[in-house]
Image (tube, helix red, strand yellow):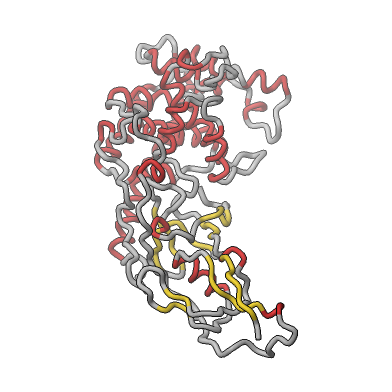
Length: 427
């Protein structure tokens, strides 16, 4: 006779056999019968139910294992998701120590990031399907608005660069108009905030990078509680932060490979060159100049061009520094492939108190997530799912689409994302 053993889910393997009926821990409803042969679907069902271990037969401990397992009730081909509502964790544990940090979570535009996904349906009964066509249409509308914004921003920075090369003049009006239009869309359509982060422009790095950094900087400024006029200055400075690269030779700027030490020394002069380009313009406020000149300084004093340390670095430059590094890490370049966002996210967090000010990293965490919308991710059940909604209160537990159903991972104690499944075309 085979003995039985309690097997943790992480040790469960296809081919094992359940030694007792498995009940749903929330409603005591039978999930799987005694004798069920473990398959990938069975493992997934157990993870979704939030179970930690199950009782299985140990045939290896017997001298004469049975020729076949006991009669079983086969697992369904696709078991519908089951929602578990675990006891709520303390706010400090689930949200991170944001309170008492001096950071406004609302800012001038109100509560920008609701604590739950805006349009994600709650999975409360088996078989609840993905959003209906009305919801899909609404999501597509928001994404189109956001995509129009980022594409317009790229065109603007491209035209600003072309105007400078042709006439040696900077078109401030175009830069300011670009920032103000973005702010207007944020005010009128708060739902585009997540999409502005997720829908990046990936081609023409030099132009797209500046536009992406501007969008990210504005979102950080909103999180920090900046008033609209301060956001406007931040946006212009972020859009023009790399303007000095127009004075860097093209063979260095567009080199398809690692720069030599001498070439990198030339590249490091672009902040000072940028300041030289803007300093005589009336619109170049101290805030804008500070962003252009100091966005490569580091909190620990190891940055450039002047090695400023801590609060000696202008605050808006500290904002743009985080956005600049993030976008550079996840962008494809001629000489490198963009880093998966969950890996880049860890680099930003690891840079707290060294590369970046702690307060800026906390602000960054309010809207940047390790697993962005539409990304394909690998679950600890071995399945691949799609991110359909980001949970701003718990960024590592988004809402996923799996087997045609939406599953809110905040309601599942065991099922979780372990990594991006693939990154091609996903950012």
